[in-house]
Length: 89
Picture 1: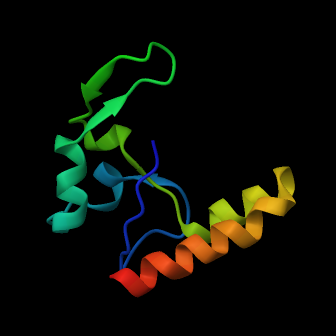
Picture 2: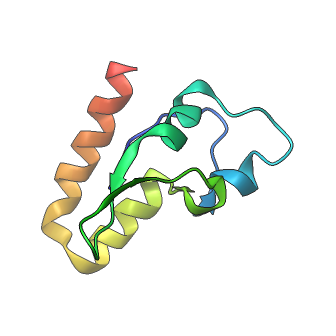
């Protein structure tokens, strides 16, 4: 499951919320994630992931670079989605 969150001080590489915010309070947008129901991609069962070391922040630029390697035609759509999410916040 992917959720877009705009952060002013997000990490530059993939890191868990627990690692990035170990000595700080979570922003409200991230605190909500630990109470959201998610679906396991393997079993299809729903659960709530409360362990912040298992919830990851992935910078948008990293997602775009990965898409360029595996699915270049998706890059424009990803960049447009990122641009739209920034205008909504």
